[in-house]
Image (cartoon, rainbow, N blue to C red):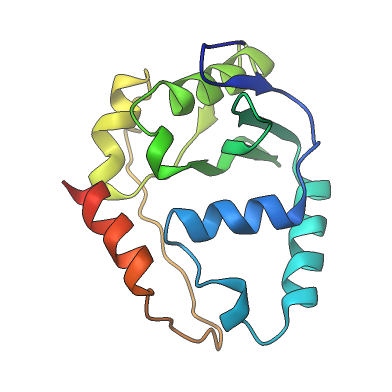
Length: 161
């Protein structure tokens, strides 16, 4: 799929560094410099990319990664991660990435577990609320909390507007 400002690709030509930079841009991770073991993080991302059943990504005219979706497959297909660079949000990138998922898994439902404040977005994209709603839980398992940098706090404030 092609748009004037981005193009969608359905392949695994995404690097662990690019995914990490996108996670930082959306405020889900601290800058790499704040991590103790950068090599370990990048190796884990490489393994996650290899395990993903389906990946689509959006790139701008310069080839920069502006959006990413990965789907895991077990007994059902789950959108594991959908990310869009903040400055590219509300431009159809997420919609195009979900359309790529729908095209790949045509005829099979796929599941998403959005944050509560993103539920309306997914409903507008054609997702339905399950008859028996689920909640997402996690176990911190020793994970250290991080404080977003002032730059990330600014991006998060812009997103919340």
